[in-house]
Amino acid sequence: MVTGRIHSLETFGTVDGPGIRFVLFMQGCALQCMYCHNPDSWNPSAGKPMTVEQVLSEIEPYLTYYEGSEGGLTVTGGEPTLQPIFVAQLFREVHARWKLHTALDTSGFNDASHLEELLAETDLVLLDLKQINREKHIKLTGQPNDRILKFARWLSDNGKKMWVRHVLVPGITDDEEDLLGLGRFIGTLQTVEKVEILPYHQMGVYKWEQLGKAYPLEGVPTPTEAEVARAKRLIELGQASSDGIAAANRE
Image 1 (cartoon, rainbow, N blue to C red):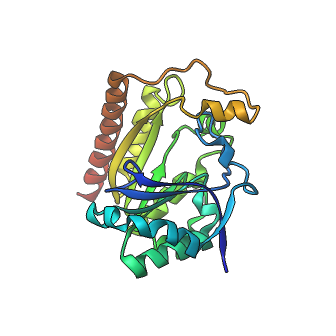
Image 2 (cartoon, one colour):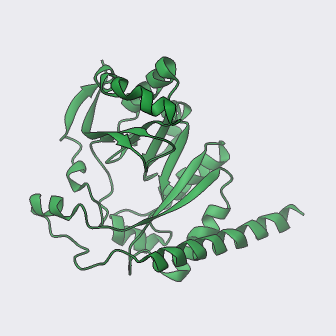
């Protein structure tokens, strides 16, 4: 029986997809984001082994809330695509038993051609586009963004619905040209239903301290409402310019 390594779970999630959701945090991640609020999820050998049936038994008591709100199950991390067989089986079971909506919250740092079984059972992808500038992405996460942008393109080309998420970190991910560039890229994708700006926060700093790690963004503030509004406006400007070019090319 396939088991997954689980970091934690949440039974009443309201920010990771539509409706009220059961949120399952998987263990293991290939990125090491400077602002990560779950650095204890990076190690793929840690966490609690659980079977699909064990996870389903955790979901079942709360079905009324998920079904009544048109919510469902969101699997996040860590990085859930590191355990694709387990997550695919879990999604398949919640579809078959309860017809729950499934959402995959991913960094996109993976190869979509290896994930077709999982993506076939995924109703919505929550795609974290952290930084459009390649060199800045390496500094922020430890990895380039080539595979991530390719994954986003695959989702678009294959008709997979997605919400794009961008964590706004003052001085790190809020440069005007980067935000415009992110918007231009998003504007080339055909299946984006929503773009979410997620304000950076320091709620996970204590975990870095518990792990004996120096927190790399010490002193960086949470962005103001005005800064979030500016970022949203710049991304939308980038999208509009990209849409305009695409429309001109079609004429």
